Length: 186
Image (cartoon, rainbow, N blue to C red; front, side, top):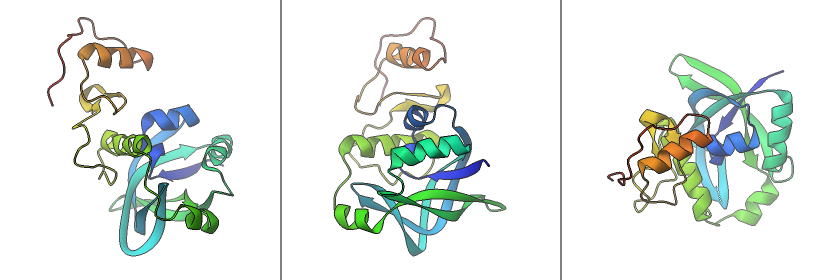
């Protein structure tokens, strides 16, 4: 049976989820109430009165869930919880998500995100237009071009239209015909 999966960390990023589950179907953005995001080397959530976590909802097949379980280290590193994912004020669905096991929480408590991981998460939030809990003030002002539905890795502060066109071609989105070689304005 297909199930909804609520992603709140690096799996919000379209590149990351496609690496792990190439045929993942994005349902849209959603949020969960009564939870908060917690930095424990990698993203984790914990119950918190009045808390809110924004994320992305996917519809996964059983074989895709099995594949994602392996990436997430289920059941040793992350366990699964069922929760209500709110799509809009009138619609919510039952979804599963991953939370660190007690042993993994103890081992990772107080550890900061690796910089590349944090930027991947931040890009995912920006890509989907949701609140970006991973952003820091010195981050690049953008790392994707929403109007063209393309993005490129956040480690580069300046990109050319040729870079964007090449990224689009790589993803099967086509290549801009006369790509300019001027850097994008910040």
